[in-house]
Length: 133
Image: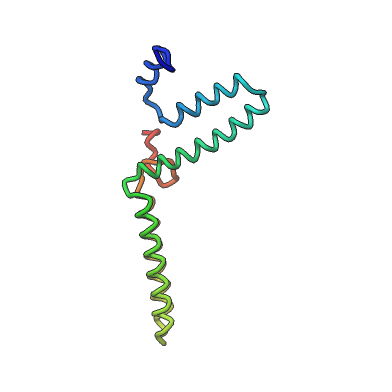
């Protein structure tokens, strides 16, 4: 005896999908039964927005390179580029500008490549088309 019937408990134990989707789906069914169509449509839109955020969070949490480290390396790269800009501006050399531009393009490109390689099996344009294989 409890809040769930035996059938509901067995279904929950056998459920293998995303955990957040189960609660969102249940709440949509509940609201659909107990509100007007207009209120349900508004609620459904909000739940779909919430689902998109939760999936994004799930994607970030499942990355091999944690999101906080990615932000840290982005900040360090930006700081390094700022220091280079200051250092190159202090030198009176004709090569300072081409060297700065080359190094900036190199480091920014390497950062973008590493970001693409962090999750090679996602849904971005640069990811492997797993569904086609």
